[in-house]
Length: 253
Image (cartoon, rainbow, N blue to C red; front, side):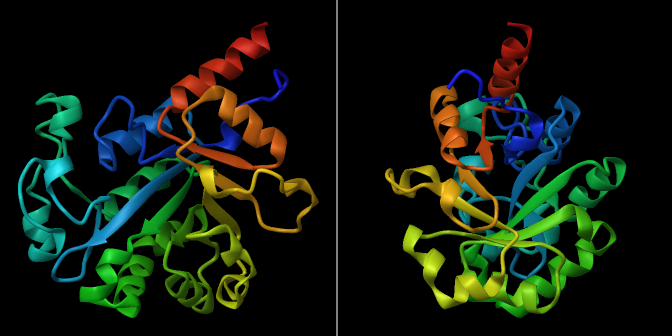
């Protein structure tokens, strides 16, 4: 297992360089790229005027330290709210604000080597609808669309992005057996994202004909080695630095 390498083309920075910076902020995404990430992942919620912001939770408490739901505020109001993860990081990043999706465009324009996995969250479907969500996201990302992959747990949303000929899309599996469902097959996904815990232990991934598999929530070196050896193509991790350091140590050793 020791010959498994964690090169940056196998690693996805989960919500940016989240270990040291507040997740899903312009700062965390820029720091991940500065660190050398070739792949970053971010989450998109929508304001009550159906405009995209970079944010994971529907609720504001954990990341912004205040009550309320994303869907209760206009984007103009949301962009004035801090995104600093007070429970995890204290007051250090209080000045960091919620970022609009446009912030990603600036980062990717300056770094053409980087690909972003842009996850559209299901919570926004109820108040915006899939069509409106895709219309806004695709319009903003158009200048850097070939550096982005639209992904979602909502298979129909991914299918619509594919039908609208977005260059690359990917589903986030709710359960492993969904790989055999018609809707997932019809998305013709370029990547499949999956919680590593739902990958069947006995399955031979290398024997399957399928798009590159990206396992997420992988923050343990030994687990990462096992997954890569098993046939997982990429690891999505909060601890990018740890995996890169392991790779460097193996190259020196």
